[in-house]
Amino acid sequence: MSYLSSGKIFQTFDGLLVFSVRTDTADNVSYIHTKKIQTVMNKQSEPEWADEKYITRVFGITHTPLYNLRKVGVIRSASLRLEGFKYGKRLYHIGRIREFLAEQESKEKLMK
Image 1 (cartoon, rainbow, N blue to C red):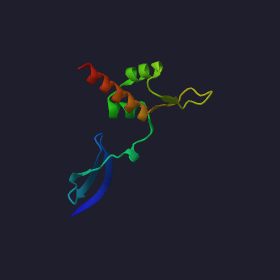
Image 2: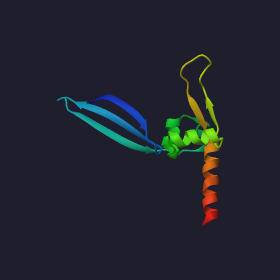
Image 3: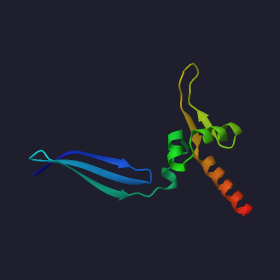
Image 4: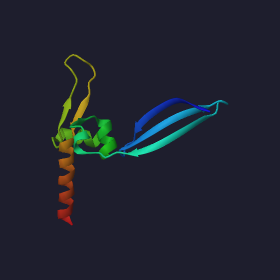
C-alpha cells in the first residue's frame, strides 16, 4: 500500500511541465515518480517585460551585455525602484530584445 505524501509541478526552461509525486510505502520506503507534460509556449503566455534572470535563461544574454545594450539605448528597460528606496528591480522589454536579435541576424546574413 502506498500513500501520496506530496505532489509538485515544476516548469523547466524548455517549456516542459514536470509533475513530481513522492509516495511512501507502509515500510517507510519513498519513491519519486515524475511525469513530463509537453506544453506549447505561445505569444500570449510570454511576458512583455522580464527581469535579468528570465532574459538570461531564455535568450542567454548575461548581465554585462544587457547593461551595455541598455546604456547604448539598443534595448528598452525600466527600473522599478521607488524614490527614497535603496533597492528596486530592473525589467527589460522582451519585444525589443527579439527585434534586436533579428536585426543582428539579418546583418550577419548580409555580410556572408
